[in-house]
Each structure stands twice: as structure tokens, then as C-alpha cells.
Length: 173
Image 1 (tube, rainbow, N blue to C red):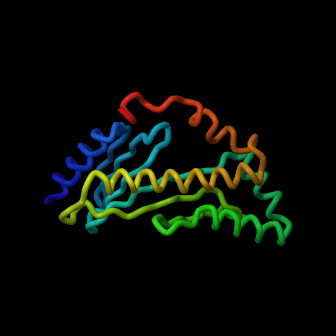
Image 2 (cartoon, rainbow, N blue to C red):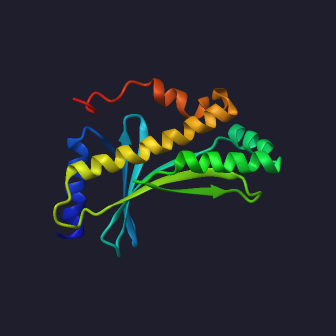
């Protein structure tokens, strides 16, 4: 299959699962789809020189969370506990993660990723759906860890509005 055929197949799978494509970009070295999974955004990124697609769920910490993390991590012992706890929350046998740090060495966001292979024979809508669910589930475990450590009010601005919205009508119907 060509890149265009795969892209159209993926877009059809996304529609069939009741998700909405909210952005599409085609750049020289990659193409990209941003989709809504419930009330969360998941990105599908295809490096054009590869036969894989990366499913990505990103969590960027708001400034109030960043300052709380920075204060907590000043104590070397608490820093180790925090780092171990966050890495443990994000670790999964089915997904990968990357934590990005600011200039001071404090985490500023994390990415949960999963590779899928739509160019290979036998790729199904089920594999796409499972990958999307997997990255969001692990991403939310990371947010749950942060809210338990920092207090829910620190994370509330990040997720409370999203979690209280009803899922789109097409999501489960």
C-alpha cells in the first residue's frame, strides 16, 4: 500500500471508532494526525522514511505544577522518590515514555508512545484502538501519581475540566 492509501485507511479507522480528527499536517519528513479520544488529544505521527506510526499522548505541566515539582525536588531524597514514582507510574510493558526536563533539570512534560505498523499486512482497527487506549491510560496513571503526590488541586487545572465533560456522542455508540 502507498502512504496515501495507509493515511486514508487510518482516517477511516479513526472515524469508525467514533473519534474525531482535529488536525492534519503533511510535512516534508512526516505526516501527522491529531485526534480526540474522549476529551483528550492523541497524536499519530508517521515519519515518512519509516514503515511505522507513533501514537503519542503528551502531558505538559502547568506553571503551578512546575513550581511545586521544583520545590519538592530541592531535597535530594524527595527528588529520588519523585523521579522513581513518576517513572514507575509511566512504565508499562505495552508503551514507552519519555520525560522532558527544563533547564534546571526538573520534569516539564512527559510523552507516552506506542509504535504501530499500519503498512504491514494484517494491521487492523483493533491495533489502532488498543494503541490509543494504551497511551491515554498510562498517561492518566502519571497524572494520578502527580495528583496524589502534589495534591489534586495542583493537577485540577490540567484534567478536571476534561474528566467532567461527557464523552462525544459517537465515542461508544
